Image (cartoon, rainbow, N blue to C red; front, top):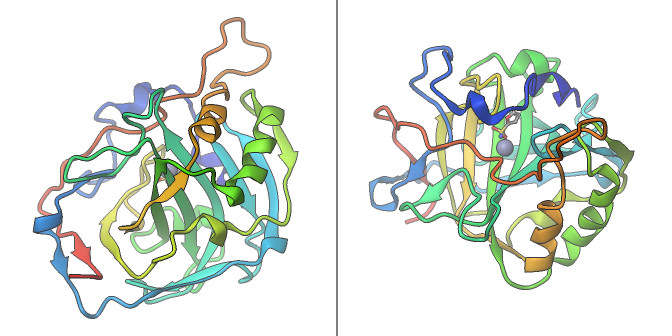
Length: 261
Ligand SMILES: NS(=O)(=O)c1ccco1
Ligand SMILES: [Zn+2]
């Protein structure tokens, strides 16, 4: 997928109150559990990912992205809060320099060491990711919290590829990876709200689906994430890729719905 254009500039200086369209549905947010509203209309998520559509993994100078061929409806997401079918474009993570923080969303202010984002776009209404990214029902992003614990066998293939993309703009072929292996056992319990991308262009086009159940990864696997660099091979000073998360944004009266009581 062409998520390249998305991260125009890398420096996290954009974290500030960048002038974004409207600016009243920005992400990430703190999910206040007791203020979320149970909605019985929310259905189970239906993911149908084809590992054959996995194409490459690259360091975009802010995170690492695993990109999928999204020219056909082969890896899709539907159900949940969604009315349409969405195509998987890429997945990536956000993490901290320590296990004490790193996630973008929080639950009752609780931080997790990292957060996985699976980025999909509405292929029923739009023909390209670039188009969908500008529309208010254009994108659906699944957020999964990571906790430090058991080694995650599904993640290891990805971890083993990271040293080859240590520097910004490095890319290698990466195939036959099924992102379903990174989803928690229970995908029926989630929170959902209308928000934005958490990196430029920060457009307010995202239906967020944040899983209640986390996945576990080992301390050593997370340490490999931190061995990546923000900087390209040419740059003199190398900066380790850590704390690549956006600060929490005002809720602005939005309601977070839950699929569970
Ligand atoms: N972090 S995220 O999933 O909101 C995203 C995807 C593309 C740009 O920002
Ligand atoms: Zn993200």
